[in-house]
Image (tube, rainbow, N blue to C red; front, side, top):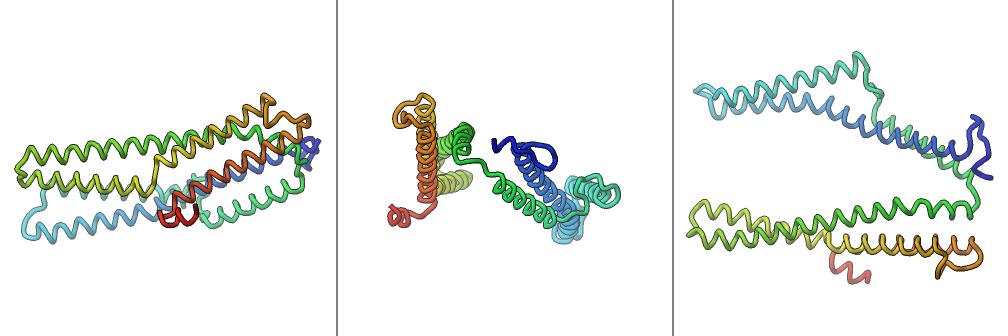
Length: 280
């Protein structure tokens, strides 16, 4: 019945809370867009001035007593014209036409609106909080997207691990091949330096970020949550109690414990090796 209580606008409690979520999501998107707009308004003129300074400096340093090559000169001219046109368009849209939704508004102001919207959402949700049984029932319906997210993250780290391993294999093999093919001459030394640098960076990155372990933990958590969700749907152990409320409570508690364990494993992976041993 909590979801059927009408609010002042004539809608339902559910519709009111959904609208708050939409407003919050819209403000977050507006903040992202506004940041890009502000970055363009201030960054483009800076790039234009930097381009002019680099062009003038290049002329003085390299071609003081001669003509600058046409190719280099054309690059600076075209870059300057593009940046000048972009700056003009952005300033015109921002201050003259106000085409953008938040023209003239600061990011700080939008963040304040977002904070107020989130506070209103919290107060409204607290005022219209449904019973715990309803919240536990809806909790089960939110798990499929969480399982999908965990598996997507797992695939991401697994692919990253495979990419790093293949780069490591190819670079290590190329070092031996280049060493055997050349004497080594001067070009081969540069290749060997690049390959050795690649092997060192990949080895260090794999040891620090541990993508393989992250992928395994995420996949394991997703499989465990799905296993418990299936057991709850089928009404089998440990969710075969006669009281549905008891099964819902046990299910929510179990899933939250698994998510807490997943976060703990993520924190352990982010710590140095000595810190991991102390935590364990």
